[in-house]
Length: 378
Image (cartoon, rainbow, N blue to C red; front, top):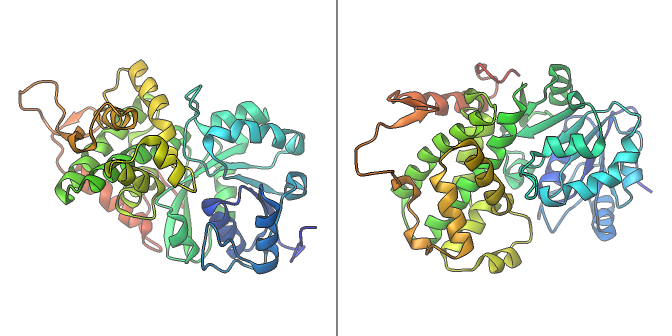
């Protein structure tokens, strides 16, 4: 049976015990919650309970005593005041079918820690949750930001955005999901927050590819800069606020994911750049790189909206084997040989200070007690 160390503490459930799920469980426990993890494998739940470790996904990390685990979904969800979902996006729907009867009749917030879109439908994870749990979207929140799991598990300071169409839900989740090393801001732009978390994965795969090929910092900086414009164009076309893509869920997450070897999407891209096939990369990865599965549905949505996404297009060509990784240069793609104005924000030419303002905004949010940004309220 799952141990409940402190019956006075609020009880929360985290569904999924990979690196990010376990890390977020630690965040919640260090913030004062009694956390019960659901692990698919009994041996993993046993290790979390007995050794307070998750050696496969978070080697060397000691977990709080207020974290426990079970491989019984009903036990994990019993009495939970908030439910956090950290499962692969492409298997989310089938897992949610099992969750549905266990949360039916409750009004607990459901929080998505997932960063992907469903291949078949192109739906964001909050939309899949709404469909499968048949719940009011005001109960659903999403968490996103520059959140590399192992760094946070080592208690290195960072920040995230909690987004919900309901300000009340966003505030309630943000109050619970924060501690001395993890700060949460809030907004109500769920579309922008979710797509920021998805799109940065595609750019990170591109950065990994050029890194694997052996290209240097100029190439990577060019792709990151043009990638932010590409992300903003796409997200705004889907109904997002452009400011969201300049914050933690956009630029902040983009920087962290593109520059760190801890990023699964960066690692997957690097393997592709070194000449491994898509199937070989999938075999080598012990965790899901969401960017690989999101490329096709994102491009389909982009075509339907009339949005050009040269970076994502070339990543897909590398994945399909129709482009040699060394030939990838999406930041150089133009419609013709005529000079073009540099757009640094959605549908705006010129404005050379926009990227710097975006970067400054993200840095301000990351500082402990930093100034508030326009779109993300602490």
